[in-house]
Image (cartoon, rainbow, N blue to C red; front, side, top):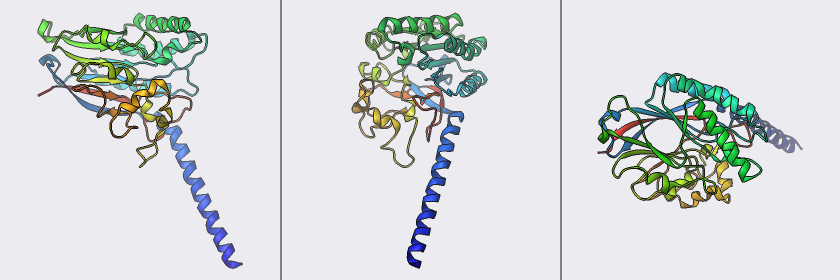
Length: 316
């Protein structure tokens, strides 16, 4: 009898301890979304003009404005940090809004309020749209919504690229052989993502950075055409289990057509943030930003929001 009491007491303490640990983990999961990770990464680019050597490109993605309990304060923190850093260029990799319903006015006004300081600080800012920016009951309505977002962003000086390439302006040089290109690929939706159309607009051997929302677009780029490409979309998994790299929230997405690119990654299938080894054509390299916002649940665990700062270096 005494043995049974002792056993049950130990089980009770174990259960209470497990409940306490779970409570701590859940508490952290609602705190972590407000902890911004500023991640400085070296980006080696062939034929990089001397005037761009050592310059910085700042990247954020997946703001998801309109998501319940959306962490707009972290977006504000990221924008303030970019302004403090004064990079040569700022890039936003899509999904400005979440699912705002039929009327997008309130969410779009908030997006513009959050983004306006970038151009007010005279930081050249460019963007692509993501799948949520087209989210609507019909394809026509989705296209209309995306047009609204694009027009609103461009009204404050943020240029939205849709399967196009532009030569980035730089005050240090205007010589033709100093051109540095930004390629922007459309959202990975029917007739929106056209990587071949976009990359064909870059002169042969010219330095370039490629921006997209969904990493699926990266697989279509020909060998050697995207030495540095940047995407978002994955939220880095959003919920990761420490010490178990084979599992994250994104592991549940493998059957989703927009996540089919996961099957093409050699090695760890859930490595869905940072540099992605073994994916894409030879000579192409993809970096996935973890984003700032959420999908479905307003939590992050072991996966802080990310501001990526690329330090440009010529490839030797």
